[in-house]
Length: 313
Length: 270
Image (cartoon, rainbow over all chains, first blue to last red; front, top):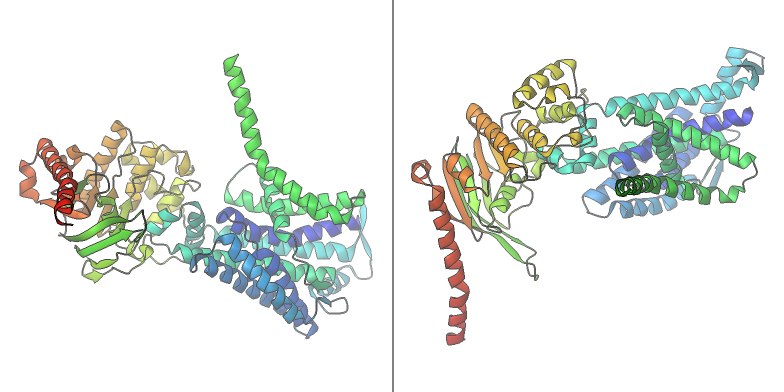
């Protein structure tokens, strides 16, 4: 049960990553690999600040701003200097590797003995449940601390999901969606599409950095390598979310990305439990995303062949 | 209203694909002018429209709109004063967004955009009211993605969007060329109605001589990146499709002479 709750919690934390990837991948149609740098950037900023004695909430906020800055730089490289989107992301991601080492001062910063958002949630749990260590949840006995942490992350993720939904229905947010959908059209209606891409990537990477900030506090350390493969992870979540929910309206897609992240984390946990070699995790994730990307086209093709066979016979 | 002074534009300069698209275009549009721009392929008529819209900056020359020098304004800044309908019916609308969202974005053309919700219940009633005269039953489909509509329906909506806020200048780039004849006629009818109602200053590129003769109060014929003929409202009244065809033939004849003459000159003097 602890394993399940732990997976759900990480799934919710990484749902922020999935939402960030959703913005770049689905709104602007390019996979922004800055994500791999900015998730670590968020983690390093938070770790460095918390070790220096800063308030964990403030540390998260600064991490969010740091991610926004990274995303904005990718956007500027892409729009102002006309560098290919993927390459702009690679440049910023590579630069962030050195910056992250500078921010942390070393490659790994432990946070086990520090006050974090999670130690706060645990003291809140102690306040609520008193000395009770376990609580009955639908017939299972579960650790109260775990439940409170899970609920805390659920709250944050839902909050960001709703905020994103609201934002994409505003004048600016709608223009941003139109920029990805038909840039010529929205330029002719007076929107600076370059600015939209810069702002959109800033928001995307801000959320991804926040995801990293929470992840570092949850797992108790920040590591310079922790961003590796995170873009594909986010893509997998978004794609699973779209498969879960067939409706293509904004609200459904956003909740789909959150659910996709949770489901994907659960699947990974189950696979590891069944004895999958952890070293194979990224290989399998990549293969999974590959299949998910080609599957719709493949299905269309078989459907068409079937159709033509029917017509011939 | 609109003035262009000796506009020049060369694409891919210094390469084998060099195209001298504009070679000194001087144009003066008065308020309320509805100008049809004719010309052969590659004569520079679409390039002129795009130069005014700000798709690219001219190599030389200036563009004044309503007294303001907009030569170096980016496209999105000019959009405050310019409404546009493109040749491709899919260019003017965002396919994955609903009809209502597309219209809502058009109501904010050139306005500062903030964090207000783009759609209100009250908007929907107004959208339905203004979409209804198109007679395409679109008022019942405001919540549908615009990509599901036909090219003609999307072009009619693009026209409505371009003129939702009255533009100082309306640019129509062969906006019926990709439509079937019946739909094209309908879109032309809608175009005429809105231009008349709002007294819009309009620059319309067209391939159809019939359209040029029937519509508007001025005809420009472009050739080789320049304005070859300029017919005012009075000239236009006497003008028939056959006259225009004759002019085209004349231009073509001149063109046929040109290479031979240069060859002759080369043979004798070089």
